[in-house]
Length: 241
Image (tube, rainbow, N blue to C red; front, side):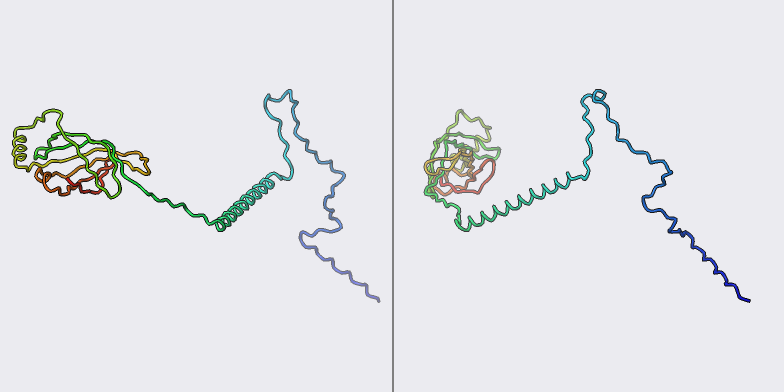
């Protein structure tokens, strides 16, 4: 007897297997299904029904090309400004090397100090306080470089000076012995005189150290004084009595 051929067992399909013959191509749509609803553009009201003064809605532009163009314009402007700056710097450097400019030099041929009219006040020194004895004006003058100028002022009291009996007795005794000490204070204004033209004058105050009557009438030793500019104290100077 002839043997019948045995049937091959059917292979089991793995889970999730799909038959390629039954798969639908991409974009396929069953014609039996209803068509999808189409989106309508938003309805715009008639201008007569719109709020007065309200602008119409703007349509959006596709692509968004405004921002890149603005950035491109800014980059071009910065590049042009940088190029102009470099060109100007190069031109200035070439001009400096070619012309070689130098700062101007000035030479003062004559310079002097110009003092305005002032006043000199004299006070007698005492333990209980200085006693003002008088004041006198003096005229203005000009002082050249490395020179000395003699200024005289006659101090006189406008009225009698009233002092205590003890102070008066001490001053009288010291005046007879020429040991009384006087203080001199000068107030004036000073400026610079260049080429016959003067500058604006600033106020100054000169205070001299107390000097005895005997020394003032002696051989003329220098008297140390101090100059004040705008209420600021400067270095001391020596004035010949």
